[in-house]
Length: 202
Image 1 (cartoon, rainbow, N blue to C red):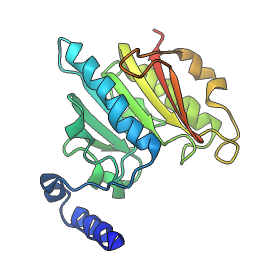
Image 2 (image 1 turned 90 degrees about the horizontal axis):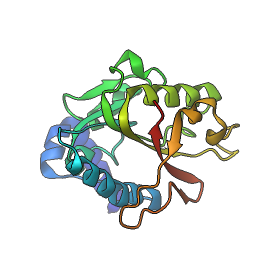
Image 3 (image 1 turned 60 degrees about the vertical axis):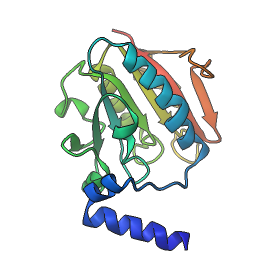
């Protein structure tokens, strides 16, 4: 029965993602790290956004059926990007770009975002060292002076042949401890998936 419901939801997205949005359709089967993102991290981000004088801007890299509703969860001008044209239906209507996260400056202006979320790219498509370097360099260029990069990645040997923290452009950032509710560390691990909070060094 659950598989049938999922198929019906996917069909609805193909027919009309905007209708799916209006109906509040979600795909509830989520991993521990995805729930961490949607609850603890989103709560942190919304708290930061409320403290800002001007409307905040947020870029979410990589879209799929699990993330289509995120624009309604975060109180910011929300932009999405994915390299796969077929995933555009899960992007934010009017604010979605089809393109590569390794060439961000081709699509966005420097220092235009308060927050960038890059989750599930490294280890799932961006698997070469140069991809990681390009992603880090691009996000650094796009973040405002007091911006925040939420980086979620898998760099185990079964995914990639390098370590994210050893990347040259990782040094463009410093790790950040949010000190918000239960978030008292800069890094959280969920099996082979890691989240790290980073602020750019300008």
